[in-house]
Length: 394
Image (cartoon, rainbow, N blue to C red; front, top):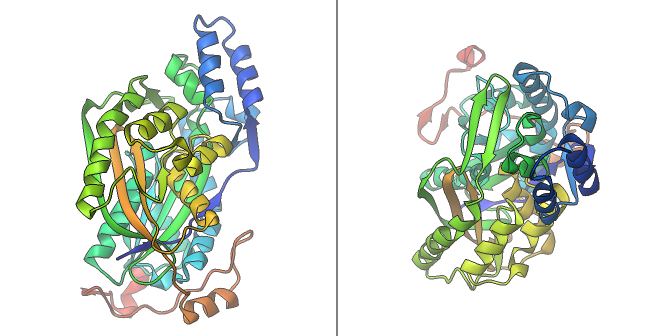
């Protein structure tokens, strides 16, 4: 069974508080006919602070889609490596141990995918599989974990690096004044998270099984229009109601494992907004306290899209579950799509060679030591490696 190891998390230095958000809404939308409703909805999110990749005054401007996407790419290149470095050290693996990289994001776009930049800049093997996921929004965090799990089931000795990079503030659209857009302006924040799924060994959530589910005919309930000014996200007020349809799917997943989804030891749930967490706890018949890691993530960071489940998982690590504890991880997003997995908590010591390598080699600023790459074997999982003299040409 594959084990999802401790995530590393980075958030930008710039912040906006709940009070600042409410005051800005009053100033920017003074004549809005539903201003009082928007203010009440924002306040009810419980989000006390969000992090922004750019200062607030710059975030409120719109330099154009091209300029914003350029910021996304430059900041991602500058910030992701140190987050990845910490995730590798936490998992006790080196760059040459990684067989696939899953990169998820819905707030910027690039081609070739960002996985290529990471492989080149950090010295990963050039036969590392690239799995970029760009269109699943908030569900992509759960999807990344599930696709990593699938990969490890196909290749039991493999290690998969998962990266979620979300700069939601770069999608702020000053001309979008629908009630859903105003709520989004007070809800979403920026963050980067990364974690390693180890095919063998490791401490963390040992994945038992996973599932995906699409709620029929809900494609336009969470969606994104691409216009000359960039990504325009839309949220429908009916989204929390989908928890009544998704809870039975979570029960089905748990039943297949012989577990009861209402009687698990821990839950790592996407913290989209309070109504979603409230609805899911009600339909799963679990106490709201069961989702405490998700609530804390929402309060401290806001909705950070695909990164939420990894940040909530890090809080679970900090809480220190007991050996053998059983739990559920689930992300929800456009579709409406649910990506869920079941896991058992397991502990394992770091392999001495990886730990020694982690202690010997320096890391990027602000991160723990990153083991340097060694020459990779000529064959990986039965797929021929390129000849030595050809590698620089790939």
